[in-house]
Amino acid sequence: MAIKKTLAGRFLSSLVLILCGLALACGAGEVLVRIATADQNNYLIEMWRYATLLKRESSDPAIGHEHIPGASARLQGVEVSINSLGMRGPEPDLTTRDKERVVIVGDSIAMGWGVPEKDTLRGQLAERLGPDVEVMTTGVGNMNMSQTVQHWLEYTEKIHPDTVILLATARAPIIQKTDQAGWLVRHSQLYALIVSFVEMTTGSGSGEEGLVDSYRAVWGGGPGKAAMDSAMDRLMQDQEEHGYRVIVLLVPEPHSFDPYRFGFINSVMATEIQKRGWVLVDPLPVMEAAPAESYWVASNDVHPNAKAFQIFADLLVPELARSKE
Image (cartoon, rainbow, N blue to C red; front, side, top):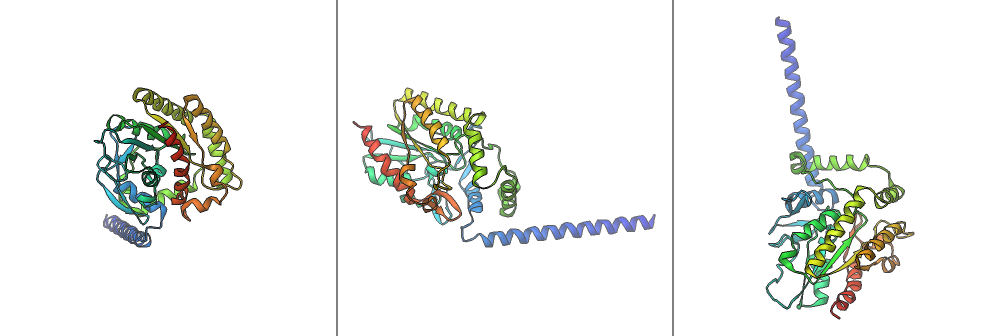
């Protein structure tokens, strides 16, 4: 009996030592990750910080998440401020009755991830259009089109826009997870980095070929495409009810333009837009004259930079002027 108690005691002592060692290793790993990513150049960690500092769970499961009104943070070296309406950018003037209102609807591209406020699409359009036009964006990162449209519908009655600019990306029909991340993911950069790495390495396909195949699958049909089409139908119903104009800007898939292998997305979207009588703006013919990476916000981040947003604005301003004719 004494021998059994001794063995049990040794086992428990060893187990405690192992657990303590693991805890110390994890703690040290967490510290090292935070030190290594303090320069804000790690895309995965900056997205993690964005999700934890500026976003919260939405009361509508169809939206999933939204910005925290009044929150602000420095992300990827750029100041990001959320106004009282939950939008990135300054407080909009919604009291001047004759002021034209333009709203950019979309995901992290509409939000202007990684770009200073003045260089975002919202900032550049506001500068071009002048003080008589109020330009806003409801863009929130990591949303598909179904989520972005549902999120926009929360704002319609507050804003009463003249024009809605819908940014359509290659990820528009991708089904996103809307469940909330666990406690460990929300509080540990190390664990969040490990989870992201595992998801990337276990994903289907690899390289550009895998990317092309995965997009062909979702744009060719299935639940994601059906959800995207339904979202555009909801937007059209809201447009008819409130009388605003819709312009769809088709954001090119950003990984490579030489050659551009995602033309099937343009074809599908052109058909859907024509059905609804909307205006399509396609920047690809202008952008493909330069390497795709020249429009990246960073070497490890394919979000559009100020140069890309300038092209978007160049193409949108004449369309916005035509809406007044």
